[in-house]
Length: 380
Ligand SMILES: [Zn+2]
Image (tube, rainbow, N blue to C red):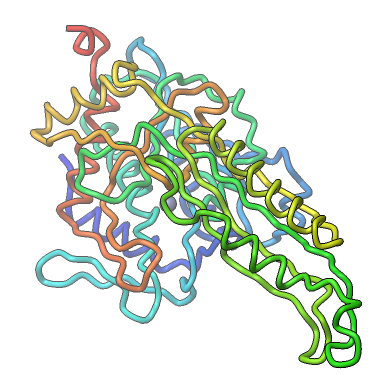
């Protein structure tokens, strides 16, 4: 039986760790220990010593396997270790009504401790009850918040499951995201020419004016049903009496359609290039692909099992798309169909973040159902 008091206790213990991205060492060690105690074979991903050397307080990705006690397709459940800032010194308190919120001016870390707790509680109950289940794989990644940096170098060939659930979404339990975007970030450096603003402004090439002009020609915000564009920062110029020679701006594009993200990027770069050259300057444009879009079809096995499990739990299943990235992007890119499921986190990435004990319980119950659902139950 799922135990609300145990859930609350484990949540509170895990939330007490400082575990901002690249600082997950202690929470990672704790979770690896808990998984071993539950009978899973735990390995950590030590394939990238450069990463671990650069971030000495980080923890490698954790991959754990619970051997099945009956045959069936292996399943994967995933969550992430890190939290966003402000997350140093955080502590969870539970109100009388079962709401869990941060004690101070920090995030709560329900993103993604809710996911971890759901998986741990489900494994605990399965072990206690002796329920039948296939091989269950668990992937707990590090540094997910900075564009899934931790899983970037994970060797996904270690994963046998072809059905994956990433517990890392807001919304009522029963919500799942079947599609998520490509996220590109970009940098444009415009090089004009400096000149004295009073004596010879005509000898200068004003990089700031080029940038301003071009920005007005670029659509931002929701630029299509499934795409957004943002210019987030701009810096440049040196003094009031100098025609600005250099301007640097950065931004991002998100789209559920990878090709559309690339096309929009190209169009933006072309505008900067044309306008800068017209004025006699040079534009240097660079893009970084952080994660790649995916779409899992409604009739995919992972989705059918999810809907079945929701029905069995009396939960309404809501299938949505999201413009946020997660490790499901990496899994899908590696050929492992993965959907992101709601696990009890609200107002994430803010100091107003909270969860509810009742949602954590529902999430654990749904996770147990997913872990134990029979193949033939899926096909009827
Ligand atoms: Zn998250």
